[in-house]
Length: 186
Image (cartoon, rainbow, N blue to C red; front, side, top):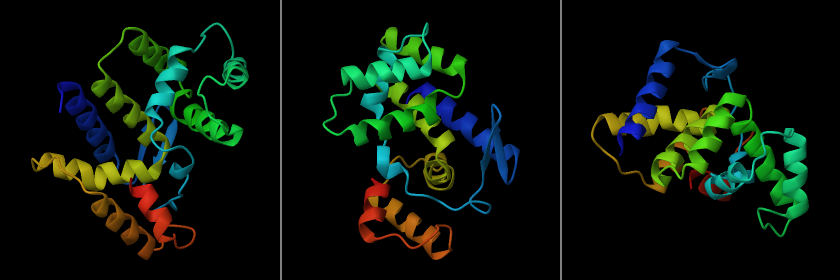
């Protein structure tokens, strides 16, 4: 784990402990699972790290979000066979990385400067977790405590068990299939 990864995790944990039930990230209220029902929306987009890097590399700050998206759709810059899949990625990209102009510009700068991929991936994961409570809570409840105790391993089965626990506690709108649990855990 790099110094930047540690900084991100420590900042994340500090923000989480600053308020017991909610965290504010630049105006976005991140609620704890005690107040929120988890969704499986991560299945629509996944981590999308490669796609995010492509979109940021071709982002034109002089045009609107809509114009950028139109360009991405017309040029099929993501190379997706399905228009639906491309839309899912664009929607996730918008939710994760376009809420703050300064963040978007900083991410573009990192891409253009060819920032090391491992550190950049951690930054992108951080922003993904800001927009998806399932990821956020998994990191703060499972990954961070493991990191603090010196462990850096995690199995898909650990994530599946954590998700099953949340379902059992009624923190999803309805029970998830084994397939949905497995895909969300990956």
